[in-house]
Amino acid sequence: PGRPGGGRSDLRFTPVPPNKEDALRVPDGYKSSVVVRWGDPVLPDAPAFDFDGQTPEAQSKQFGYNCDYVTLFPMGDDRALMWVNHEYTDENLMFRGYTGGAEATEEQIRIGLAAHGGSVVEIERAGGSGQWKLVTKGRRRYNRRITAQTKMRFTGPAAGHELLRTAADPKGRTPVGMLNNCSGGTTPWKTVLTAEENIDQYFVNGDKVPAAQKPYIERYTITTGVPEESRRFDRVEERFDLAKHPHEANRFGWIVEIDPFDPDSTPVKRTALGRFKHEAATTTLSRDGHLVVYMGDDSRFEYVYKFVSKDRYQPGNDRHNRSLLDEGTLYVAKFTGDSPKKEIDGSGKLPKDKEFDGSGEWIPLVSGDRSYVKGMSAAEVLVYTRVAADKVGATKMDRPEDIERNPVTGGVFVALTNNTNRTPAQVDEANPRPSNKHGHVLEITERRDDAGARRFAWSLVLVCGDPKDATTYFAGYDKSKVSPISCPDNVTFDKDGNLWISTDGNELGSNDGLFVMPVEGKERGHLRQFLTVPVGAETCGPLVTSDQRSVFVAVQHPGEIDGATPDNPGSRWPDGDQPRPAVAVVWHGKGKKIGS
Ligand code: FEO
Ligand code: CA
Ligand code: CA
Ligand code: CA
Image 1 (cartoon, rainbow, N blue to C red):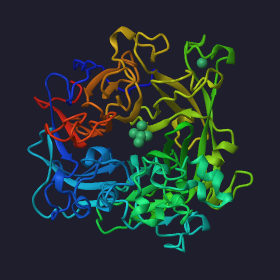
Image 2 (cartoon, rainbow, N blue to C red; image 1 turned 180 degrees about the vertical axis):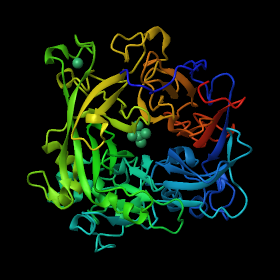
Image 3 (cartoon, rainbow, N blue to C red; image 1 turned 60 degrees about the vertical axis):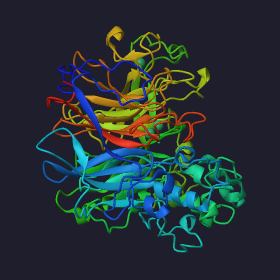
Image 4 (spheres, protein in one colour; image 1 turned 90 degrees about the horizontal axis):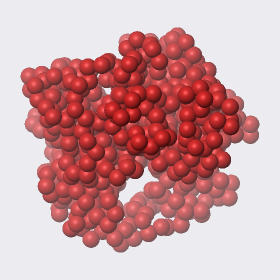
């Protein structure tokens, strides 16, 4: 605390109160509109969306389902390329009468495959307004759909390894498709890094693999047997049946690099960044110019990772820069508290030094072909990264989701969504609450603010929940003046260094939303809710444009509530009809800076 910058005190908007409305609610004086929704044409020859006339061919040219990570690549002041992840599908909301993958038509299963992946779309705005719109006419030469069927390639130390080989790809170098792309990042050379997260759910018969592979299948919670809720991708593509193709699961769970400016480019799965349920891939530079990538593994008791490239970034030399993600060191984080263990007693109360804080270290797992983990080769560390991290004593966290570096202060912020499975005996100072329903936010301060450092200090800036709950903590700010928050998920910063936090799974009984908070100065901890999303939705994306005139959010899975179907949808957002996941933009009606 006390470093200059890190937010400003002119955030004056009136917070949006917690609510359960089936609407995107924004503060007084602000406006919002949908930029692009599920089914909108992406490729110029895509047909218009027809809920009752869906086909795989149409879906492979239209905006996919469940939009998550959102990023922009400016092309001048009033035009940009927007990249959006399509994390997963809700077949029960997409198709009338859907009763599971066993009875689904093959056509429906193929629509599901095509609705995954990501989209590149051109967007534009008129005359400096904060309202961005989808470009719907003209050539749109960059527009592209990536799906679960797009041809990709592996690079880095594990490419070609036996563990990545299958009957269809005996060389282990050409995986097909990406799945469950959740959060992500961008590179200084203007490509997208998109993170494959919960890939375990797409396979069947995880228990019918060779005995030697079984512990790894279990560690990645890959589906066993053929459960009723399975999408049954194996019915149209045999590779999803692990009894027949046991290595196919190893080909998912990676960071994928995509060049939005080259629609013919082959997406690349970068094996040097390890394989887990990837969240985020936030890049920054170390003091001496190495590329650093911060990553989370979003499951209970999983880890925080970072990658540091072997070579230095060379501004302008993108041919060289594109190789940086293939060689370097992968580290996992260990967090140590500075308060006596007896003060971290499972009550959730602050210790005597009034802070959950301490020091930490980045433990190396693998560098190129060199493994630092006993009994595992370098390739095994990269393919079974979770197992490697277990062996070196890394700290098990409460679902490490998004990670972002503050552009003003250099602090690295980690959203820890929740972990209801943590017992009182399992608490530590970095994860101090048992049965942690509401999650927390942790700041890493790298030694000398050098992203390449091996050691760091850390502290919790938010322990989420109802401010009236004694175990919540808002960086010491007056709790009578803050908005309740639960399940911090995706985070971003605006140019001034304010932290923006979106939520997924609000356990306080109201809809998810987007919040903003300065992280330094006297307003540090003054958290305010900026918007709420419709019923059943989580808030993803968040992105504040560099001119601070627009906020983008991905409204993911509106209407995803128990028992919802097209005849009885949990939400009718955004069009008063069937719910459609969509990217929305919010701006001030008088063109003021976001947050004013
Ligand atoms: Fe897809 Fe970790 O949320
Ligand atoms: Ca402490
Ligand atoms: Ca999440
Ligand atoms: Ca998420």
